[in-house]
Amino acid sequence: MRSGTTGSGAIAPRYSLTLVVPAALAGVAVAWALTAPDAVQAEAPVRALADGLGATVLGLAVLPRLHARIPPAWRLLAVFGGLWAATEFMLLSIEAAEVVGVRPTRLRTGDFGHYLAHISAGQIGIGVMIGTVAVTVYAALAHHQPDRATPDPVVVFAAVTLELRPITGHMSQQLLGSVLAAVHVLAASVWFGLLLAMALVLRGRGEWAAILPRYSRWALPAVAAVTGTGIVNGLVHIGDLAALLNTGYGRILLAKAVMVTALIALGRWWRGHWVPAAAAHRMPAASSLRRALIELIVMAVVFGLAAALSVTA
Image (cartoon, rainbow, N blue to C red):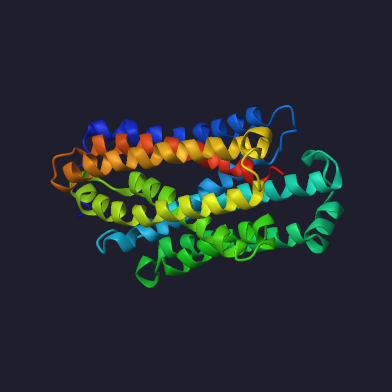
């Protein structure tokens, strides 16, 4: 199945996948504008990148489950796992500096150690770092011995690591809040990360024909879970519909809802046009990549909004 040709037209869209990074940062910038004149949260851009990298790792680990003939992309898993670990460490340093009241560049080792040892957010950060490093090391070792490795441990570690912060956030104080937060994050990560993994790994129209319809079936319940839990989480947090316009949190939430609605509409269009054409081998790989890129850019903006939302009071 890996023998399918990509065609020269597929090269540009694959490199263009880097556009998801500025798209996520644009989402953070929009969120900052919506919260003005309130102070911005410096960790939001790093949180957006960390969440996106974590979702990508999860997507790459889950991808072989969509088709038995798609082998795990261990090299990509190790690279993205390493980037995820580095970004999470940066995020942890920023959070520690904010607690101490200094710039991250002026954070002393002793203060950082105290934050990790005695502050609950720091202790959660240690768990996150353990998860990201474990994923990276396992993927690196598996790259050299692929016949003795399975992506299942990566799926478990990535999923648990992605959920550590959300399940201990403000929603954890509500009845079933941690469960709703966990479902929301995991569904969003599968929705985004699996599509990005497909764009990174799939070659040739044959692979898109085999995988895209299966992804479409996975995406449907993921979208439903993201939407349902997002509505409940948002309503619990704002408490009053008037807060959608009167508070920075509410305005970000409203913008996120608009973008998710646009994604649902786009997904409905794809299910009627892109998916049938790709399944029938009538869609070149480059065209599938371009369509995936469009959806990923919109998703990345939503991830940026969500990251800002998670650090906004």
